Length: 125
Image: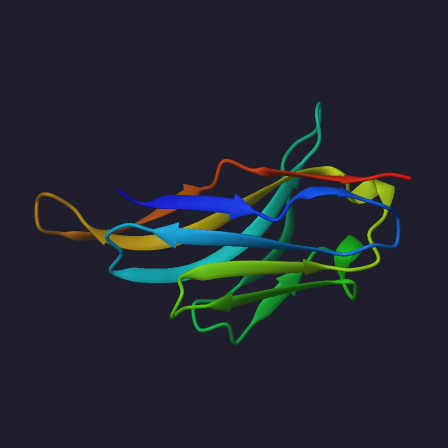
């Protein structure tokens, strides 16, 4: 069974930094594109950043370009999000997303999208 577990959230003052981690565990055949999304109450979940399977290409929401950096360590099957210069509007629950290939009970390999449980990031003075 595949699990995504986020960590690193918390309360930080404006201008501060946090580093989120997303550890992937389970019987994985392929760990493909991954990403971070965030959601505030009453609003739709929005994309923060994505990264390809090899880590060679990244994509960011315009609102976080520059201060945020997405990265991954495939040997550790872990995704990261370094968040600098945090603003109150960055307050949200942050979710890890991963496209993972696993072998199903019928013997076929399939690609599915998995989500973590979310970690709260609060930026306030």
